[in-house]
Length: 457
Ligand code: CMX
Image (spheres, rainbow, N blue to C red):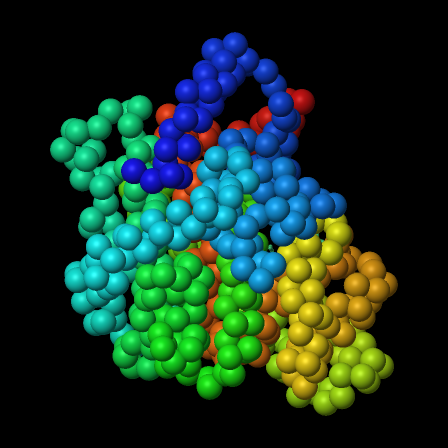
């Protein structure tokens, strides 16, 4: 058992009775109208899922258990003023702000899991990862690695042996989810070393350090004690990179339930597939260009733009380049959002990270350009008059900051995103099983029926 699981266990009776009350007494209450437009428009806006961890507000952005990012920054425990992703796990799962000690209990839980594996991936997973073609897409590698981890799923084994009843499904789902998250530093380290080092390890796990540190270490981005410090960063840069990782991992954990990776994890999980298979499915969705790949598009865009403009103070030239893109009917990557109608607060905290380290970034033309664009592009997009939100989203900044510190393999960015995004959907999967939600099975309609419905109304 763990402090987190014990706290969770106490919450279960009340939450189950709240759900039961809704089911028994209010099942027929109508809360939304489904239109033909939404059915053929990606179900946009349909209010049709239960998702407890986060909600997305068009003006305030993402809220974690009702708290804005700023409120999370002010109240969640962390290091150097940046909250630890572990504290977000506690918050999303229990709805309570953890103490530093409770936050550390999750770090310890991960390290106990890793120690029990000798700080290595399970042997069969390691062997499969070692034998993948080194140029296999990093997201494909992540998906394969997660699926292989399912070999040791407690949930799947207990279920197969008929040893658990419905009321207990959550318990081994919790255990598997923690094993999955704990293994991510090893898994993404393996993928990165396949990508850049012919599979040779770039670093090792330090069992006294937090989850994000160990991710950095396995990417070869900590002091030489734990990793090769592959880019020869100085101590301040290494600390800053570790903090960037904590920040990035902390703010990408969840974005409501309807986005593809979250929804897919929930959908596949509703079949009682184990957490590894469920989240691997979410990862396959995250690998799509319309979902998780935007950050790499932004970096490509900034690199090309910088080649053309040379001087980041040449506003006229930058503006004309932006217009050229728009006039050729392309989008400006990193700007706009399906739901948000204000600058993405996640972008703002990334920008703050840069502003607090001017000396580090003052000679980086790409980061300078990223900052400059955030002041120039919104007014251009407003003049252009098409998009509903002319402001930067989180992807406008994140990739170029990793690039600055030497993570320059663009295909790899989404893998780091996939580490962070494990948290929200897996927390929800645990709750899905606490609530005993049924298999998801919406009704589909054929085109003829849709047409018939429109003429009869
Ligand atoms: N540059 C130029 N045109 C844009 C634009 C941008 N950054 N964002 C939106 N538009 C255009 C759309 O293409 C659309 O044009 P059409 O009517 O010709 O199809 C019009 O403005 C209206 O779009 P919208 O309602 O404002 O935005 P959507 O909900 O359709 O799309 C998004 C949202 C994010 C896909 C879109 O803004 C976009 O393509 N942005 C650039 C890519 C990007 O940054 N993606 C990261 C998203 C981050 C996230 O989802 O978390």
